[in-house]
Amino acid sequence: MSDSTLSQLLADVFGYTAFREGQLQVIEAVQQGHDALVLMPTGGGKSLCYQLPALAGTGLTVVISPLISLMQDQVEALQAMGVAAAALNNSLTPEQNTTVMQQLHNNEIRLLYVSPERAMQSFFMRQLQQWQVNLVAIDEAHCISQWGHDFRPEYGQLGQLRESLPNVPFMALTATADAATESDIITRLHLHQPVVYKGSFDRPNIRYVVEEKYKPYKQVTDYIKKQRGASGIVYCGSRKKVEELAEKLQREGLKAAGYHAGMEHEQREFVLRGFVRDDIDVVVATVAFGMGINKPNVRFVVHFDVPRSVEGYYQETGRAGRDGLPAEAVLLYDPSDAGWIQSIILQNPDDERRRIEQHKFAAMQSMCEAQTCRRLVLLNYFSEYRDKPCGNCDICLDPPRQYDGTVDAQKVLSCVYRVGQRFGVNHVIDVLRGSKSQRLMELGHDKLSTYALGAEHSHEYWLGVVRQLIHRGLLIQNVQQYGILQLTEAARPVLRGDIALQLAEPRINLVVSKPRVAD
Ligand code: ADP
Ligand code: ZN
Image 1 (cartoon, rainbow, N blue to C red):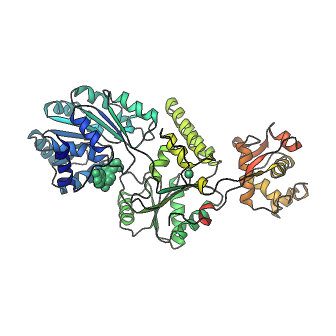
Image 2: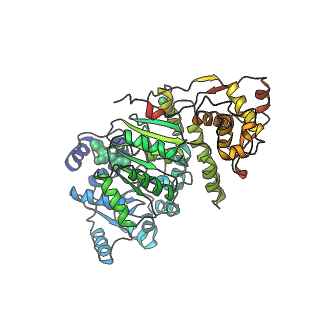
Image 3: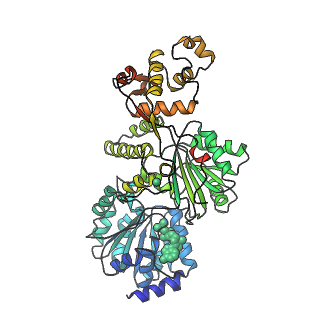
């Protein structure tokens, strides 16, 4: 089919005047019978890549999609545009199921959405061979990969589907694009020399900020108050924290609500609808919230806890600023959170999976700890290389300043030594700052030579120094023993004054104190 006919369909059915980057290329590839792999960020326009060819032909396009709610939304939207679309999944009544099957036999359906489980049923696979299938599109294709952050076992079988329809072009689509996932999709789906289209993963209107986490509840509350009713999402690492934070925000008079998979279905729907209609400003949620939400005006996404992978981080932050206007992604980072995340990862009984998750988490951690442009690190992770820093992340806007931190380091290290290497971060800082807490007095730590040596700086300041000493390997935080701080060999030359140590100035209250440049 010629470009102009495709453009005509684009205008007539969808009401769009032009193709987006990559769409035409992919559509033409499958029309010529090639397999295709489409890697585009969320919101990039992937659906059109299989919807349009479906309308251009007389046969059937089968779309494999993992989420029933997403399927339903798409089918309804298509039907509203007058497209013959249907879905087959476990939520249909037997009568509805029979009706759809009849329509399929009569070749009355152009687009059929099915769950991967359904697609793999042998009865259904045989039916597919009877019908005139023009294209099979696999949405959220990263679910097939162990490397994907969202692996689904039922996707694992889809390679068989490809074998049973050897002459039908397959199109795999995903918003996850690290090289390992990409090649895994091609292998596992048995794609034959696919045309690969990879869009840019840059979201230039999103400002990335990583902030030291020290008083997270207060940090988040202050931040949200500054947003004055703008729409936002706060992701937390557990349901319990979701509930606690949502309640705290409500008590502050903010229009906030919690969302997690443990809540009643109706309650979740209520929150989702409220958010979409702007009745609720802030949703505090686990990662269960988000897939399939198409709300353009989300102005900020906060990570209360560090995500477990860069892909997850990218997907979640990607829900901000779909309208192209300035938006912000703020991550509160506390290196010691890594301890409990690692313990969750270690509980996974599957060796391979555990190894992958550890690897992914390490990449996330290094992104948080990087001293270079966040966007460069992020895009680099998706194999998209840039050489110029972005100018719209915390590092670019406020480059970390180095200073001679030898004396600060000596204060901390000797304080750790004086308390017998038997206390955690907070106690060491209390001693340094000359706290008069009862416990400290009872221990006699006010008599130590390092007592009140660092009274001139805030708790957060010292926390920043301690964390850097941990990163640099001068201190270790013994997780087996309540996180007590201990010196390493590397601390000796610094303590003795044999070598100087450059440190980065602690970055505190960054977001709250910085005006938005793009405003
Ligand atoms: P993805 O699946 O990649 O996240 P979608 O397919 O949901 O993205 O598309 C995102 C938005 O872009 C949708 O609102 C869609 O209607 C719109 N869109 C897609 N293609 C075009 C186009 N060629 N012109 C204008 N809008 C488009
Ligand atoms: Zn930058």
